[in-house]
Structures are given as C-alpha cells and as structure tokens.
Image 1 (cartoon, one colour):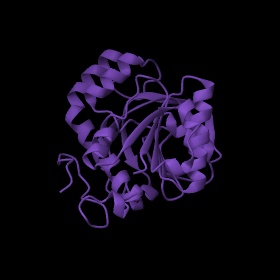
Image 2 (image 1 turned 90 degrees about the vertical axis):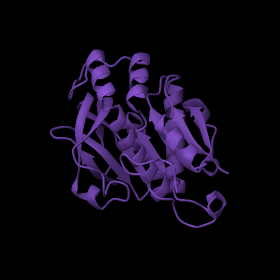
Image 3 (image 1 turned 45 degrees about the horizontal axis):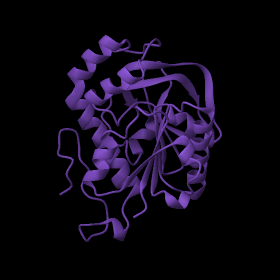
Length: 253
C-alpha cells in the first residue's frame, strides 16, 4: 500500500500519536526529513503530514515543494505546528507581521469549523499546546476553522482535504515533555506552561486528555478525510471504521 508520509524537520520530532492511530488502523507510515521529501512524487504519498520546524533551508524547501505537489494532486495534507506555515505558503500565504505564541491555549471553533468534516464535534475550549513563534499570513483560499481569544488562527483548511493546525495533536503529555527537552521552549507565552517547568507540570496533569483529544482529532482526519480504498479495508467493507472520541479506545471495532 502507498504509505502515509510524515515529514519532520528535526531528529527529535516523531509522529507520536499519529503513528499509534495509523498502526491501529493498519496503515503504513514512512518518516522522512525535508531533503528526502524533495525526492518524492505526489503519487508516492497516500496522505501527507508535515511536522515543520525545518532545521535547514534545503529541508524547508524540500518540505514546501512536496506540500505544493500534494496540494496540486489533491493528496490529503495535515500540517502541524510550524508545518502549517509551509501549507499556508504553498497555497499563497506565509508568515505575517507580529508574533505567535508558545504555551497552552484554549481553542474554540470558528463559525466555519462547526460545519467542517473533522472539527464539527471538536469541543470548544479544548486546551492545546502550541509552539510556533511566528504568526501566519493565511492565503485567500484558506478557511479559518479554530482560534483562541486574542490570538492568531489555530486551524485552517485549504480546499476540502488540506488542514493546517498550529498546535500539537500528535503529542501526548510525555511526548510533549520529550519534545520540549530536545528543543527547549522559551518566551512568547500565550498561556500556562510557557517555561519548561510550568510546561512539565501542565503536561503531566493533562496527559490523559492530551492523548484522548489528539488521537480523536487525528483519527477523524485519517478516517473521514483520507478514508479507505478497498485495498486498505481489512474488515472487508467500504467506509471508515468508527471514529474514537475522547476517553474511548483507539482500536477500531
């Protein structure tokens, strides 16, 4: 089967909960860096996730080029944290004036998010960890799906199947700590957990919720946006398996 491709910008970045969601759905995953991404054609990608944080210009350019090819070919895209900037740029936007934020923020759906395929039942007020210091300049084609009070957009969609999410749904509390320790967060607080000790305390306290909320959002993208072909349906039926909600098992039944 054609794999789900995950582009990471640094060695410490992992697919995290997304890898767990895909493994339990028996979907193959290929983890690459930006320079490797530049060698891939859209036809080699079942769906694309971009973790962002590209450490080199070559890596950034390679990730951006693959996002552009996938957008043109209609391949589903999920761009997370600073990866959302690559999606915005590939669609004609980029980085705007002002600064983004680092820390835990309460995310609420915009009006268009209430009718969106994966955000329609997203609980307003969900606390998420965002770590992008740059503000996005969204392209005209973008639909804003979610944000937080007084801050920049936190989720947007390009077309019907390309999503940019400014927070880290792929990181549970323990994974978030490992991420922060490998690339320490500093400055630009937008909520609790802006320094490393506060982040550690908040991440430990929110571990079960971060895992449940992240897996639910990622599962809806895999199930409802990417979907399944007949080849990918081990249960011998068309359509997606049940979508897990917060607190429920991730195992499809």
